[in-house]
Length: 222
Image 1: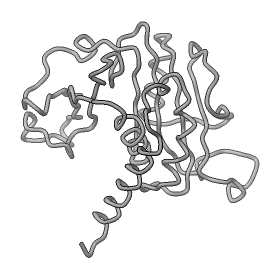
Image 2: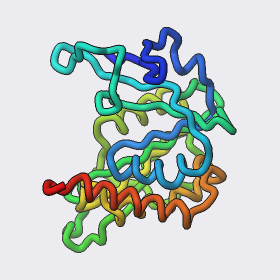
Image 3: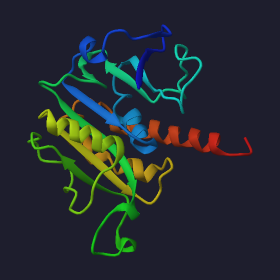
Image 4: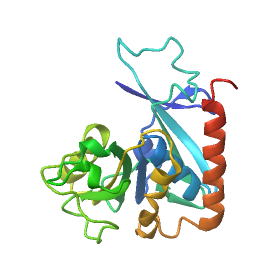
């Protein structure tokens, strides 16, 4: 079961976010490096407002306080761009485009070559039939497959004929990593993200500060 909340007012959302905030662009970041990229280069370029968050619930991951949901308990947080509310973290089925960013370990990449000869990180794309734009990198080759939430999103979009593309970064460093985050930069030229990023040098500096903060917090002696 997925439960939706608004953390600011500490109340459950009775109305579907899809109905309350219709949008034309839906951007999903999954994993530390994809989230860091989106936070530094996109959400830094404009005023974004949190409009809700999602919590997965079942007998194994239930929480006794479902109303006062903390950021660490949130499975997903939804934002929309206040200056352009059509850019949001949720969407209807018409007149919109979905972009998904995520990472996998390079050893998951299937190729006739030795994975040791691959120069990671590198970016691959997988799109639905209705996505007509040229991708920002080469397409993912067979027999490679995608997994988990990215696969579910693309499958949903394919069934409902929603233009969607997944940008999958293969890397040998799954923790937050500056080089891995940088591998997503070609996506900045895509139609979904183009125009949202105002100052790339400033965003790069914010990313470096984010990396420094993460390294300090990860130090067991601090």
